[in-house]
Length: 334
Image 1 (cartoon, rainbow, N blue to C red):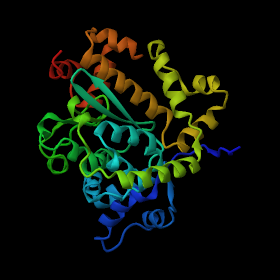
Image 2: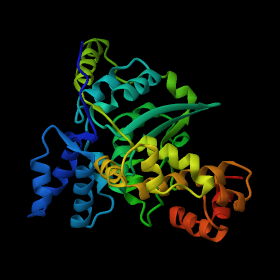
Image 3: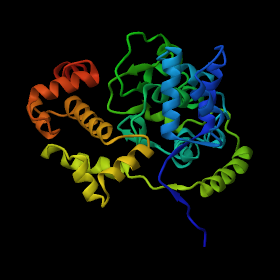
């Protein structure tokens, strides 16, 4: 019987940090702590350590678009077997199924999910932790540059790239990274949408012989990867269930999960997030869904999200999106 190894703290493959390290090579010197993080990471790096390194790199370079620049440096194979498995799939649909299965090889907090709505396909990039902008831009940009861009070739104007963060004042690096596609900011999720027919397209350069070799290797590697015992999903679920009651506090959530407040806080920190970030992110996602796609009165939405009064909801919504709920609803065509 195979022993299943478990650990509490999720990781990234260290290869994901290499494009950032290459960008920093142009500087005469970088902060010693950041240099140590990059040199001592090993094959895998804790998510919270990677995020600290990225935030430190952004502060040091004063470049908020660092994640996009790093994404454009990626070439096929930089993130290992996942790239080759996805590229060797016969069709785009099968490539996305492979991405969903093997993404843990490089990213233990990301879930790739395909959703079909009529004639449109949505590829959701769902993270169990709240990402700093540099990490989010890199994740979305890397997936686009290595795979999506080829899949939608010939009709990029029919595709949309989704970001949950607000649009920055300067979109130059976004337009370079995602040419000809529509960009949607302050969206409910990260990901991509494109015509459903794209799913049946053959993957350019698919290689059956490569696939016969690389898929068994990916399976074997996946089997050796330790399972992450995450509490983030449980906390998210409890928060969503209790928002209409004003939202839970960390003490009540810890009690439901059978642990102390201190232990819960430590577990969440080990998974690269905090209770406050999860609560705010849950409210934001539901707010964008309710305001953008449902015929609900704004005061009713404020109540459902656990706000004590509508004015507080309006302030939070403007902080999340840079717009009022009414302006966002109008832009969504409601």
